[in-house]
Length: 170
Image 1 (tube, one colour):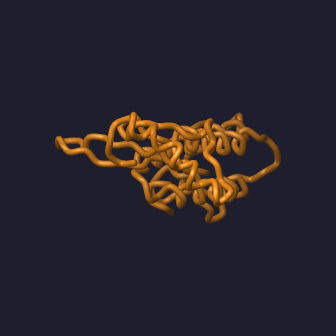
Image 2 (tube, helix red, strand yellow):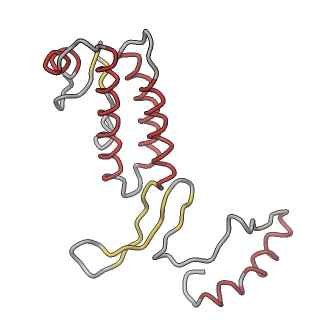
């Protein structure tokens, strides 16, 4: 229901259950709830919420990546960069790029720019910390000259493989 009072929406539960029953479906009490669009809801990894557009007095419905979805990608980046071993930077970047590219392509249709910038900063920080752990005796200037030579500046790169830039899609 799009318009009406909370009492009207709660009265529709029986009607919805009656429509779904012949199809062999039923509503899950744990997953279904009645709420206002200003509170927002999470659906398929997106957080959908009505907010006021900055600089105006008009309200629009925005879709963002949910906090749970962002936590899942940051955990994957954290897990990939916490492993030590005989991997090369190029191998790590290929692994991270595949995961981040798929996640960003899924969420590109929402208002995801701020989330993409956060993911970019988080992944850059994790990769540079991984590099510092792999080369404990190296100073920052040498590390930057040797590994942070990517096109937009200070991007980790090795053997032609550069860290994925979520906000640019490259």
